[in-house]
Image (cartoon, rainbow, N blue to C red; front, side, top):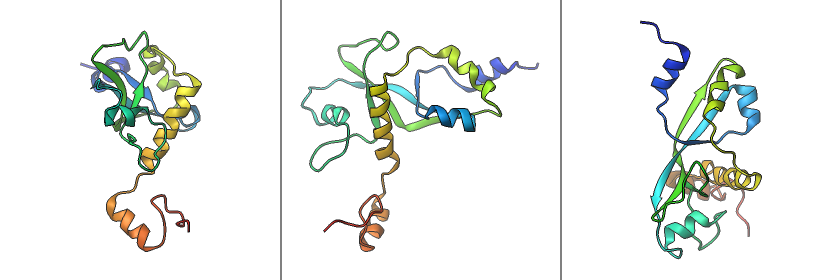
Length: 156
């Protein structure tokens, strides 16, 4: 039995809400879409370290910051829940590639909401810090070369 393209995609890509992590130029030029899965995290008091780290837009000295999750605001598609908050899981990503842009159009049928420009900017900033993260052995090698965690010369 032959599967149609739509049936094949439905069987390969399980239904689950996701956020497009790529910029539109990447989608248009490379015909790939990187998706971050949407998940739920237990809502904790606002002063709890996890909640502070989710609400912090950029890492800074002495302030908690989440490199692995990005907080989402409730929408029509993501209903507000009293004991949960919605997050994009940055560690578990799915990449979908096609030979041409038209073959990615099926994804638009599943669009439920668009992020605001401000929300997209905050997500892009978090992605920069997420992908620029260096591991402990890299940090040690960079430090011994007189460089900071981003590979830049240390100040002072």
